[in-house]
Length: 321
Figure (cartoon, helix red, strand yellow):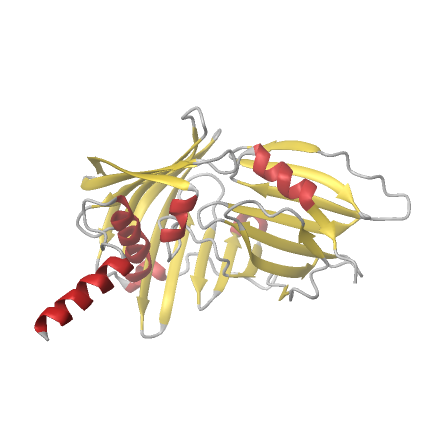
């Protein structure tokens, strides 16, 4: 009886696969994904993208009342972003403006990894790198090398002690840095309540923009990607009003878990509207491709190679009802 039980357990373990351990790159990806969602942390990090360089302070905590995150720029134009209970509130004091939006699927650094990272192996070669140091902490490097030309590579560094993502670098096929996030200092554990206190208090003369929009069902989208990119899927569809009658903007997001590509669809304005010539625009690390189709203007953007953006833009088609 005992022998049969042991054999059954062995067969079960074989069918499930060998669990990842600290010597496995996927183990470290899972640690990073879990740590960013479960830990309380605060710190300062820098963001580099093309000619854009920003220093930001972040504080994130979760408890009985839910999750709260506060992000503040420390240089350039002041900006404060607070995420709480599925809502994102962006305060722009220089413009006396508050923008209210829903919390999207893509999260801020260091919460950059999907909950399920196993699916990434189909389109990335995942390699465990060397130990190093980031923000004075020992860090384990993990590289994700794309297996096609539809996504960039990612170099990630996890805190050995907690698993928190300390540094994230996106690279092009030549190894050039597309964008980079890196903590200069970080604290993990119990946080002081004042770290989450709003710095700016909107006055009566401030402008409040409600950008939350409404979820669009698959039957109401009216557009589809005819040739879906391998590994990508539609993860969000929201329709927003921009203030003009019959001028809603449809926002679709396609993702492979790491890379996110947004598609904005809006009607051409005026009876004599001229079709937008198809082509790329330059916007730092974010690629932009625009075109006109079926009386609408499409703008596709994301931190993805041009081939991916072009294929999404050229593959969008209006759905015939």
